[in-house]
Amino acid sequence: MLSSLYVDFNSYFASVEQQEHEQYRGKPIAVVPVMADTTCAIAASYEAKRYGVRTGTIIGEAKKMCPDLILVPARHGKYIDYHNRLVEAVESAIHVRRVMSIDEMVCDLTGSARQRAKAETIAHDVKKVIADKVGPYMKCSIGIAPNDFLAKTASDLQKPDGLVVIEREDLPHILYSMELRDICGIGRNMHKRLWKHGIYTVEMLCNAPKEKLHAVWGGIEGDRFWAKLRGEQVPFYEPNKTTVGHSHVLPPRLRTQESADGVMHRLLQKAAMRLRKYGLLTANLDVRVRYVAGDRWKCDMDLTPTQDIVQLTGALARMFEQRPVHDGVPFFVAVSLNKLIPAGMAPVPMFEHTGPSREALNTTIDKLNLKYGRNTVYLGGAHNALASAPMRIAFTHIPDVEIDEEEEEDE
Image 1 (cartoon, rainbow, N blue to C red):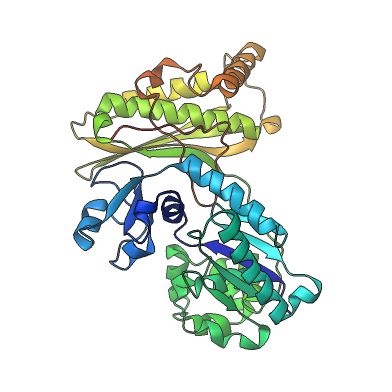
Image 2 (cartoon, rainbow, N blue to C red):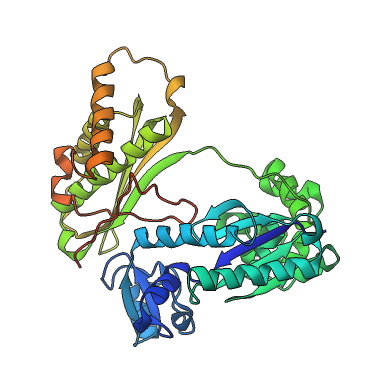
């Protein structure tokens, strides 16, 4: 019996830009974080994909593949606005049970809607209401299946603007034409593990006994995967948050060590504000820098569990002191807060100079920035990077616009 309808928006960021700007329609465009040949595409229109341009393609290479490629600066606030409008539009046709990412959502089929003809009618209604309420360039592929996993898989089988139904009698042979890496949940590392266990094709994966997949996954997640392949509705599992962080490709004007340090301070302050909103503490700070020539610098430091920006800034300064002298040109920086625990579970530190006054300081900083706008109050290390590190969207995480207000960047 059909039970899930999965909506996957095609080339989402690029489609938003084509919906917004008539001059981009029907043209090969790539959405980029900064206007530089050394960055990579974070989205490509289908016109660009025909030339081989994909998410992650270095722009210098993309221009060789597609000489007429149009570069469009990313506008993450706009993509969140469209996301909210799209959820509202789909909701008017069928209830959205869960938003899976910025460009994906899943809906339940109940009652007569579980019959194929009715489910397909609902899918066409969803496409129509999106075109009418949001715009005709916001195309989506819809998958319908007995569970969320197979509905997601079905949505990947026909793009763009597809509609694919997988019924139980179609299983498992309908999946055999896919590559292992095409299956949701099989990334590079899992692909290697499958090969190590003698599973080289989707057909072999589908026919493997539950015990073998348990061994491949190293636990019950293998059992869950075995069940999902057979159309069983496996309860959604929300993993605990293990890291909070931000990364940034530096625009050419900020590709100096001093500017890169300022951006890292800015990223740290953003991450710390998110940490406090989530009610978490971090026991590890990790920073990374990549240079134009290919060199890298990485450093991490364990901490007494904290969410205090003064302590975190001091730790970052100590890490900078450990950094070897490097005359390279930095182009990418990242800051991550790891080893997260709920604030109420941490022991009270005996020797750290924190307490109610420091908590009040952090709370006041957050309140002022939320009320009057980002950068109203900040620590001085970020002063030369206040206009940098704007909102970024990881596809599985939709930013909180209160915290992560978008700003424009120079080229």
